[in-house]
Amino acid sequence: MKKRQKKESFDFIIVPSWISVKDKLPSKEDTDDEYLVTDGEIVDLAIWWNKVGTKKKWDFYTPQIIPGAVTHWILVPKPPQLQNL
Image (cartoon, rainbow, N blue to C red; front, side, top):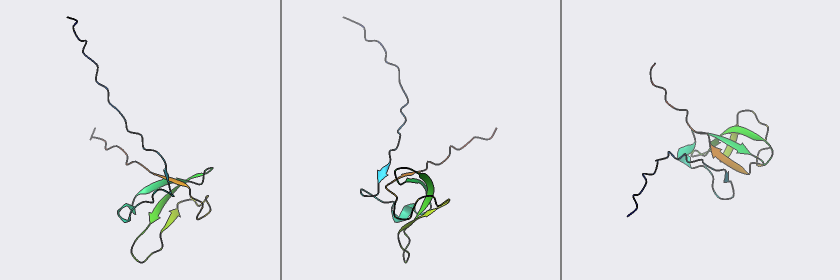
């Protein structure tokens, strides 16, 4: 009988992908998060407003994209927590 070789273990990184605004928009719970948004040419940083009594909209930090022209978005990941040095 052949001995099986021990396989190395690997850490996998899940890379999020861009989400089309036609497929989904951020939920009400996600209104404090930051997003990268694009119109297909420009990428900008924005937050999503979807609170009760307000109009659903993107609020851009540096408005380089025409309102209503956002085609895709992706959540900006939280930075890693550093241990005290």
